[in-house]
Length: 213
Image (cartoon, rainbow, N blue to C red; front, side):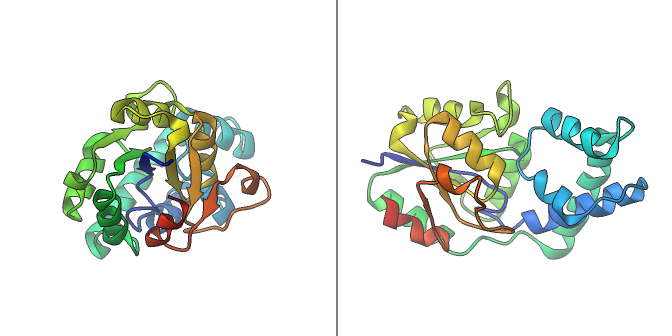
């Protein structure tokens, strides 16, 4: 029996991954790197230290991940100011469904908690979640399981009784390693052969998650 649903934020609750995708490429290219779309996709929800090591492995030891990330942050902020925050389809419907059926809800995101709360307040859903946690509050970010274990602890449920809703491979790996039941709602990519065996299910939109409850 499913007792709770834990959601990633970017690319799941809000349509922001497309902005990160473009901003990573623009930022890295401004430093002179041949940074392509596949590299941007690798960084979705990824822990900064893991990402830094990964990018150095691709581009060399002189790749200053944290400097590039600072430029990327500014570019994303500009894009959000220009385009605004957009809810992902089915968000209100699934949150209403879960509340009506007595199922707990939480957010487990890689985004810093202050920015997370700002975004969720702006789209009017912050108070609809029982708990909101960030990977910045635990020792290791995604794809490590820490943030999902922390979220489940905060809502008082065993991971095995919780669906985790994700859009990225790093998020799916994190949720699976924590013992949650990962449901993917594809955003920028579809599940690949590495991710498919880890999935409890795939939903077209957030509203379709109720099929797995």
